[in-house]
Length: 146
Ligand code: DQA
Image (cartoon, rainbow, N blue to C red; front, side):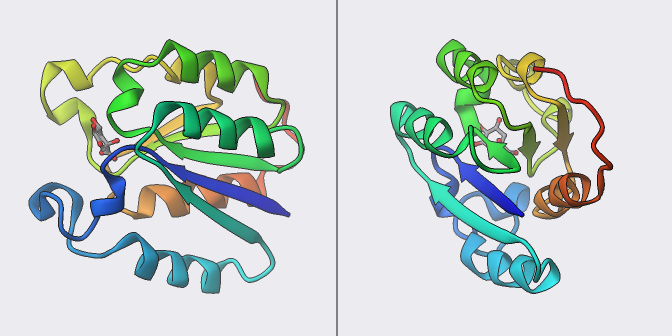
């Protein structure tokens, strides 16, 4: 099984960026633990601050992998292009957020991509990614919305 994690803008600064909101662990260290937890799963990781590069990566893996776990960062709230891309690929895409966006500024309450994703997980810190992978690895061929 192959799962692609994609992190969007500013998420390369995890561990340093607003630790009161996003915690003090780097994504690289969390990823190591995640891979140990799901030893039978190939978990690939990609991060970019550039919207088009996130789209390129989704197009590259989205017809082949078993799922994409996407934290689009602030592009969540703005990007029709990401929404179109999620609709275009055939694998399920789960939207994740580290913080509970609904407890934060109102501009974070709207997502441009949720409507194209199979589901949304927000507010569980880095465990949001783990919960998404748990879903993808345990679901029993349930149909997902395109
Ligand atoms: C975020 C929430 C977004 O509103 C914000 O722009 C981010 C991170 C999260 O993981 O909580 O960059 O996606």
